[in-house]
Length: 138
Image (cartoon, rainbow, N blue to C red; front, top):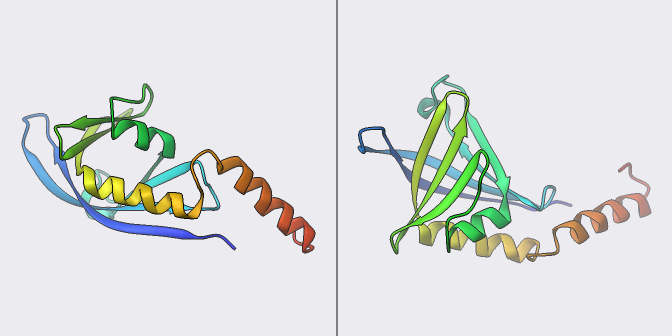
């Protein structure tokens, strides 16, 4: 059986004019996909009016809380002592969000209670092995 953690949080969208707009977001982690974390955004805050989810490596989030991390579509870096910036790069442009570092740290710590760091692949293999053992399909 898979475990899913969800933590509602707020973020601040930083506009091109350095204005900040409060937006809701949900941090999500599931043992079904142990190397990844997800940030879900409700439809009313997206450009196309559809709910959006950004998925990226849990290790990237952990690294980005301490120092700038990421070179691809998602980049994470500290923004002072109390905040963390998460940048989402897409064909439509870049969205920069500021989160309270304490919220991200608390969420990350909770994910480690489900699947310890460095055990992501072991857990997935164990899940597959147990499913096969009990006659399920992998």
